Image 1 (cartoon, one colour):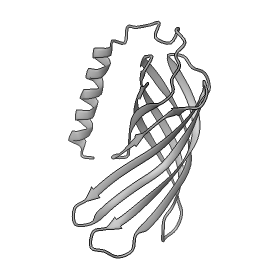
Image 2: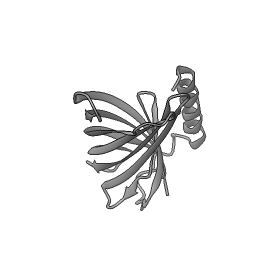
Image 3: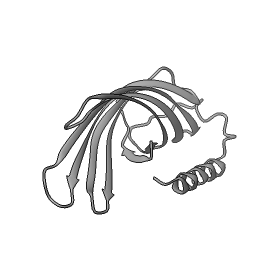
Length: 165
C-alpha cells in the first residue's frame, strides 16, 4: 500500500472516531453479547479482512482472507485464522493469541503455484469507541516458512478496525 493510501485510511479512521464520539464513557458498562464481526487489518502495507467469531466472553476465532493482484506478475491469495484470548473486557481490552496463514502465489504467465506458510504469536489490545466498534494494535512474532528457501523469523505490528454485530 502506498504511503498516500495509508494517510487516507488514517484520516477516514479519525473521522469515524469523531462521528461515533469518544465521549460515551459507559459504553463498556452495559453487558454486550457479541457474536460475529467484520474487521480490516493493515500490516506492513498488506491488508486483510477478518471475520471475528466470539466463541465465549473472552475468546475469538477469526478466519482471515487477503487477495492481492500484481500486474504482470500474478495473484496472491491468503487464507488463515487467528485466535484471541482477552485478559479482561473493558473499554481497553488487552489480548494475546496465535495465528496461522498460508499465502498461495498464482503466477499470471502460468507455471506452478507457490505456497508460503506463516505461524506466529501476538499481543495486542482493542480500544472500544462504542459497544460495537473498536480499533486495535498488535505486535507480532512470526515464523515464515517459504515454499523454497530458508525459514525466517519476523516481527511486525498491525492496526485493526473491528465492527461487531
